[in-house]
Length: 440
Image 1 (cartoon, helix red, strand yellow):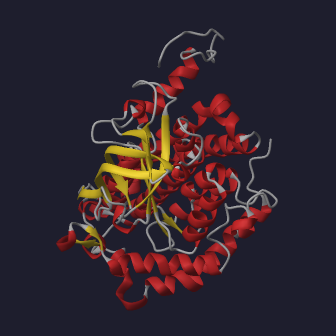
Image 2 (tube, helix red, strand yellow):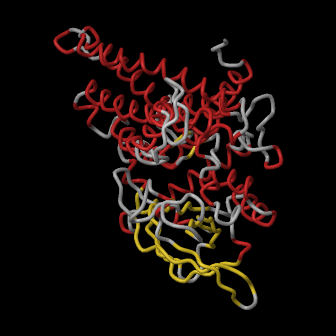
Image 3 (cartoon, one colour):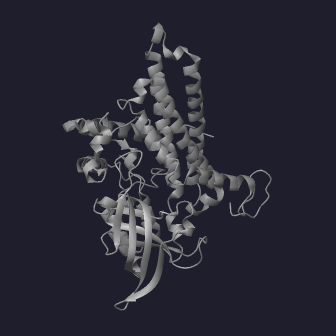
């Protein structure tokens, strides 16, 4: 059992850091671009007079940094070779590599190299590309993947609704067959909420029930809908704890699409929705771990330097012990994340849910919660300074608090772990091997 980071991955991290120092840091320091990262960050990023949407200058800066990363060969690491990536090349782009990289970047703190508020990084994450790769027809692959990698296509993910979140199988959006001008297709009606990136989207993945009853997993389909189709309207953008917002509530009224717009098998759209869920969760866990490490290290440095009454804060056990507990949990969590990532890499994608879905959920919910605890502790250790926006901890807390809800709320993920642990839902109990029938 070898717990060391592979030498080629260590070299990759060194090369990545060198690229960031030589290309990205100068860009961040240019033209007062630091306003997007220092105490002015929320105001600098948010166009308050345009519905709270991201300012164009902010999104342009993100785009330019990704262009540089793509040009240098870092951005598409996790993609297959035919899309300019290095996945499957001696383990590069694997779940282990991506977990280590995501932790490494998040542990560096806030910066243009890795801004998680936008899921932005010099080493990209491509859930939409993976969905189309696995389920798209040839025309969809050409249009959507090719356009996405050129920066000409942006896709939203339409599963959540105003009345339905974790209970996706009860969605109210419906699709029914309808032929127009001799072409078979579907008429869609309903609403979606939290459509991230809607303000700049070119396409939407809209999930709708096309057969069956509420609560049934089968009978939901995924449709690729061009953003500006008649009847598809962004009704509002929801202001959030961490601004700017690009999270829209949309209405879908008599939107017609041809059969060729279906992504994946008809009536089996939930499989499409879950195509990348485990990879996303393990990478999100690694990012939260990295941010936790950053908060702990910054707090230790501050406690050693700050000396009220002539004695460093770090001499007080009331300061030491909470940070000791956080550091201990970081070490344990790191091993679970990397072990789980290695196991994911050792089996077919379809086996992950059946064999180690509980471990992925453990990593994700605990890392996200731990990061919020670490950011809160960092604020406390730094006192009034920590509460100010001149330090990054309030921003880290506000962003990672979101992760405890998105990508599967922590309650949903704990429920999944319980299914494995107690043997519910047709699974064998990890404790006694029994199977209990339950919808848990």
